[in-house]
Length: 242
Image 1 (spheres, rainbow, N blue to C red):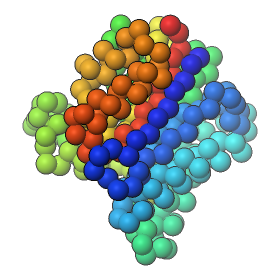
Image 2 (cartoon, rainbow, N blue to C red; image 1 turned 45 degrees about the vertical axis):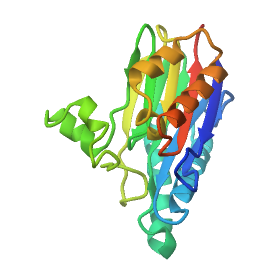
Image 3 (cartoon, helix red, strand yellow; image 1 turned 60 degrees about the horizontal axis):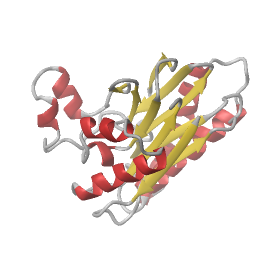
């Protein structure tokens, strides 16, 4: 397994409110762990929220016992991180209303486990690019009911409105996904600072190129910046097989 991670502030934002974590080594009972969080809120509250999400999720995983399933660990770690962010938000005036997306994954014995809340994404590649997570966003709901198309969502005025996140309510319910990695070549996590700037077709073209994954990651960031770079950009590439 080869991995690469990168975050970039972009061209518009004054603060990078994205955070990420990657470890090919065990974290608690998990053999590896990868996380991206994209924060939101005034002042530097988004930066605080995403940092807390990563730190508290990892900290909780480190304490888990082997009696719990990976799905249970992911759900409990998400809810624990949510509680920490929510409590800080309601008890610290300058942090009121802060929140963050989070997508996390671990690969265990040819099985990929994923937890997601918000609109950061996890994709996998085989002979195509497949989005595994489902955006918790207003435009995704409009797409689902047929009111707008996927192409129309890119320029929709409410494209940044998310319907689920960590820290915005007393309870957080992540989506959990489980799939085989046997036919996969790469796992790709990213914040929406990439996906709002670079289309899926172009992402796949770069990820399926002959470049090393570090170069692929750098090229993807450059593409997002070239196309406007209106948000922070964070991505993780996990290469399972060449």
